Amino acid sequence: MLAKLGAKPTNIPPGELYTALERGTIDALEWVGPSLDLRMGFHKIAPYYYTGWHEPGAELQFLVNKKTFESLPEDLQEILRVAMKAAAYDMYAQSMHESGKNWSTMSAEYPDIQVKTFPDEVMTALRKANAELLKSNAEADPFAARVLKSQQSYLEDIRQWTNMSDKAYLNSTGD
Image (cartoon, rainbow, N blue to C red):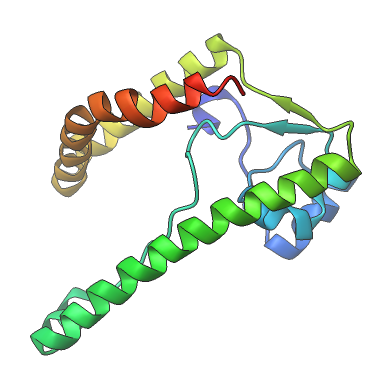
């Protein structure tokens, strides 16, 4: 998506990100968020912190070989399902907590960090590029089309509630 808009995304091993940013090899990077950014030290050399426009928070995924999973007894399949759900929720809660703590540390130690949000025209371009790529992938792959349709249907079902709950709460706090 970023390449479609003219950026030149580059995959760099995590251990080389700080040096690449410091030397100007890359102009910016997307990592995790304050929960893991603090220990990477990016805030020491990058004065701007952009809000997460592409994901609201940490997510954890598990990749399991379907054939192997289905060969397990039902009780072990269920144990794995429950363990993966518990681990994913634990990761989410831990990431939220650590991001809050670490952001406090980062902003106190480096008060010149500026939190920025992309302008509306950039967000519009990002959404448009994303929609075009999703459509292209869905047209080329029936499985991708099924996944996209499922996700869009789910978002339609849940969006009204999230607007009434999470979004309304966040908008009402004044922060």
